[in-house]
Length: 253
Image 1 (cartoon, one colour):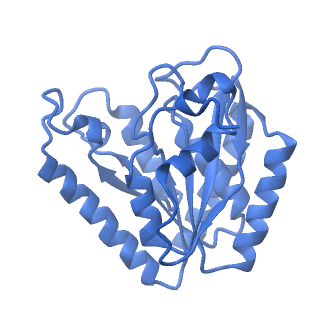
Image 2 (cartoon, rainbow, N blue to C red):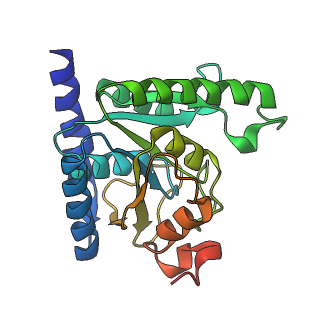
């Protein structure tokens, strides 16, 4: 019964809510890619996926969750997502929104794993050490290893930049995404591009705004494959964003 309730919540929050609160546009190429990925995951039930997205505002994980629902509509995969350790610290002020989002996500069956972001390590504002950060990632990787041994495949939703962009331009990707993918091999990397038409609030939900949600071609990484690089994955993500948002990959096409 608990699983049924979680799947129902995931349908409402992940599938229906984004279409209700945003003027959401998914172009035809993205729709075709979604169809191809959905078919592949349906036929290859043991393949995991990593849905990775550019991070420009507070509500981006909701949109990544929406794509997860489109490519795996039967919810056959366990969804896990890293989340900011500091933004889910009840001792820190102004964390109410993130804590609320965490509770909603967990009610939808999404497993949230707290990690210390790279830019916060040895930063006096946060006070986290490299050792503390390593421990959070070790816990995440141990859990991924457990999941990969289970009968249920996994879907991981992650922001490869590690934090929200200050100006909306895609920043460098961190190696954590590739490390997570190697724990989940065989894995399909699914790039998810998020862009608003006009101004948006970096720290807000931006309900009612018109936004473009793009899904690129998946990249398959088989078990034992070490040829894939973070740069290849980031180029794949940049290619589905408007040129002005592609950053160092602006000339990739």
